[in-house]
Image 1: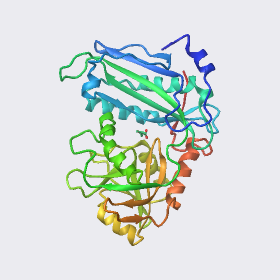
Image 2: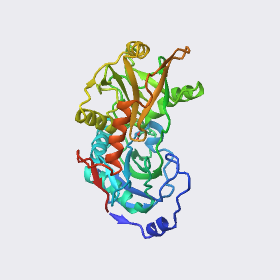
Image 3: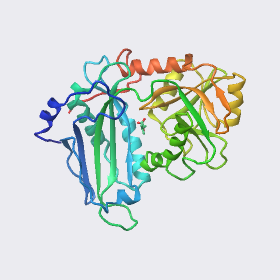
Image 4: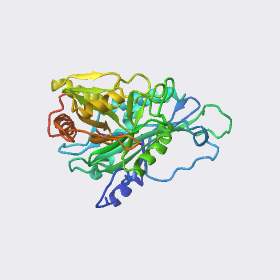
Length: 351
Ligand code: COI
């Protein structure tokens, strides 16, 4: 890996703002790797800067672009720790395969996220809920207007010292019109187009006083899938229920971690179909006591109400209830170094 001579001075000059927000403060570093003639070049650690791209680059026309989201923590660790980066590397390659993009060797994905985190270690915030949010992405750069896969690609890792994405409880609205993903589509990978296509419903939700749409399956519009950038969980009769990842749902790293933690804490977990109308009745009858969303950016965010566009509201009996709270505390305690890493989820950043 090459390290640009201007990088360290750029990091030394950089001052963190008082208010970080989520994803708004960009760390003064980026990792870049280019793919051409069937091979990856050498990684470069560069000062964060604009990149130039040909206006006919395939990504701008055909959205041949995938991304990841993962976090590095200072917390109470002596060194910056990444959370489960190998899981992100594996999912990244599943996204690449679906979008006909070249495989990125796991070692290069880890080199990128690890080197970026280590070189901005002094800028990784350490208050509870804070982290360095990392955004690896890959896109097709071949200049040509024909509909065909790109033959050259750029892989970047950029990073943002951030606060938690969500602080309060979420108000979600059932999306019974548009759909996020269908069988055989790209819903189970992190193709950027999935997120672009979710924006219309997300903005409509915000305009009507909600935070996010709750997506249903495209075939029957009957079963819960996920939120736009988070997986969905509900506590029903003391058991934790979440939609199974059967092809249209993103298999979240946080989702997987919640399931592992719940199992370890003796909370029964059921992965399978959750019919929206049944769930809404279970909320009314208080059989469903809690619901929450989870994701890398969001961690675990309680849901206070599930609403319908016709105005019907289903208020959860417990907001930030015992199950969501316990799982959130357990997860953050591991991530931020207050509890032993009993699942071996942390990876020390280095370069
Ligand atoms: C993440 O949690 O990393 C996501 O992908 C959500 C992001 C789109 C804000």
